[in-house]
Length: 456
Image (cartoon, rainbow, N blue to C red; front, top):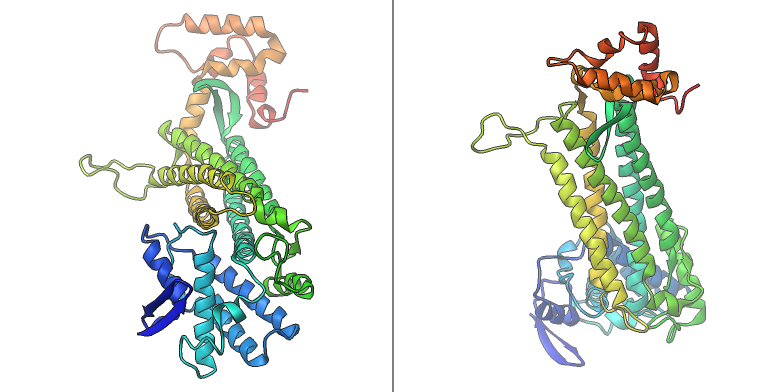
C-alpha cells in the first residue's frame, strides 16, 4: 500500500494500481452500476492528454523527460493497454472530473515508472501540475467525447453502407417479382418485391448521409477554454497551439470554437447528433417490422437460425428481426435520456456529461453492431416467388392498373362481376380475359410497366 494526500485528507492506495487518491475516492463514492466508461472515450481522452503534453513541451512548460514519459504512457493507453486501470462508474457526478483525474493519475504513475520512480512520487511528475497542465475537465472531457464520437460515427456510416448494399442487392434480385402493395394493412396497388426492398435501401441511404454529416457538428471543440471557456490559467499561445496538436494526432478536421463559453455551457450538438441515431433507429424498426410481416405472409423467407420454442417442435421465430427491433427501441429511449440530460445543464457547465457520453457511445456501438448483423441477415433472405405471383394474380386489386385503358367505371363493373362469382373463384387475371385481350393484360401487368412511374 502507499499513502496519498489531497485537500480532504489521505487514503491508502493499493500499490499494484496506477490510479491515485482522486480515483479511489470516486470508487468509494460511485458504487452504483456495472457501467464503465467505454474504451473509445478512454482512448480519445488519452489522445487529448498527449496533445496537451506536446503543446506544453513545445512552449517550454514541461521538460523533455516529463514530456517523453507522459507521451509514452498516453500511447500505451491509446493502444488498449491498462484498460483495467479505469474502473470509474459511468454513473458519476461532477461533469467528468472523476474520469479526468483517473486519466491524469494513471498517466502520471505510468510515467513515473518510466523515469525510474515509484508510483505516487508526484514531485517528479504530478497528475495535475504536469499531466493536467493548462487544462480543466470542462474542456478536455467534452473535446475527448467529440473526438470519440467522430470516429464512431465514421464507423457507423460504414456499417450503414453495408446494410444499404445488402438491401440494394435484394432490390435487383427481386426486381421482376410481382406483388401487392399494402396501405393500412389492406391490399393496395401492384408493385414489385424489388421495389419494396428498394424503398428500404433508400431510407437507409439517407441514414448513411446523415450519419456522415454528423462530423460537421462535432469537430468544433472548446479545448483551451479551461473551466468555463474564458481560457483562465492557460497561456494564449497554448490555446492556439493545442487545437493544431489535436488535428495532427487524430487526423480529423477539428477547429476551436469561436465562442468557447457557449461551447462549454451548451451541448445542443450532442442532442442534434443523437437525433440522427434516433432517425436511424426508427428506420430500422420500420424495416424490421415490414420484413417480419412479409415473412408471416410467406412472401419472403427469413433465414432459420435457431429453435423458436421449448414446447412446439419445429417452430422457428424471426429472432434477428426481433433483436434489431428491441435494440433500436433502446436507442430511441437513449435519445430521450440524452436530451433530458442536456437540458439540465446549468449556466456554464453540464453536470451530467459522463452519462451523456456513456449513453451516446452506447447507442453508436449498438447501432454499428446492429447494422452489421442486419446486413448479414438481409443477404440470406429468399423470395417466395410462387406465393407472391399466386397472390398477385388472384387479387382483384390489380384492376387499378387498367384504369388508364378502360376507365374507373368499367373497372368497377368488372370487380362487381367478379364478386358475384361463387367460390372457388378463378384467378383474376384469367377472369380479365373475358373483357380484355391477353396481350393487353400481359403488357399492363408487366413489372417494368407497373414500376415505370406513370403511364405513357
